[in-house]
Image (cartoon, rainbow, N blue to C red):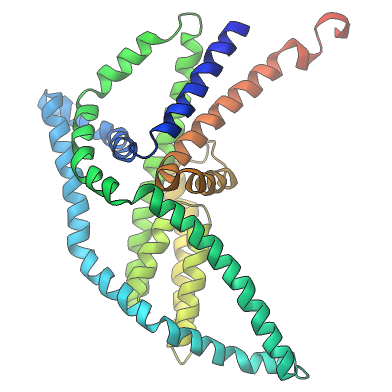
Length: 356
């Protein structure tokens, strides 16, 4: 048992060390690996029909890149114009928000002097600058760690090659790695790998589908209501839904605030809030249970912590690896706890602690 723990401990340390040493060049390989894992079921179905794994891999890749290209071709011009317009009008929205809040502040604090108002504004500005500085630092880590020029070029040139070969040889790679497993622990390791695959498939594949559907729903719904920049806010909300509760909360606050500033009456504001609430109902009662599943073993708090920690430690690469590593650690922790609860030490049946 000690030798086994020593072996796996050394293997884990080597993996972490190699991941840290090569973190600056791993992005295209990680993206290719993730895309291959995502597309493997599609390639399996195509292979069963075409009787050629290489041709199935090519067709799956073409379908994947065609979908990405179609998205940018259809939505990017609109998104780009809305993002630029939102940046130009942001100062006006802030000024309108300040003017809207002033009457309520006078009612709540009628005896508040001008000096006190200035002090409150100064304190609020200091705290807001701290929050923005922290957010900017985190974004800077993500940007510098994952979107440098070299990585952008490597994503465009290397990732398709990595994706093709991984997708073509996926079953062979799995079989080869399975043959490396130690005979004594092979059954246990296979069981844990199957649990990891189930967790990742349920979360990554399912959650990605949920995010795309929610982005389309929010974007179309807010655009139909007439909210300015509704398409951008809706798509961003759907994509941020990958972080549990965070995406919907941010989208709701931004969307309702813009609706209050834009519309003179309350009906459109209520409709905007209704779009977000209806999206939350659809996600919680239909999309997530059907596409993700309720027993994936990843608690929302654990996912949020993993994403923030990954982004802080390794930038964009860390964000990509956060959920898979969290899933692996979660499965390993549950296995270790299960073994502990079956042990004589936990049950109190060893040595002098044995119960009559």
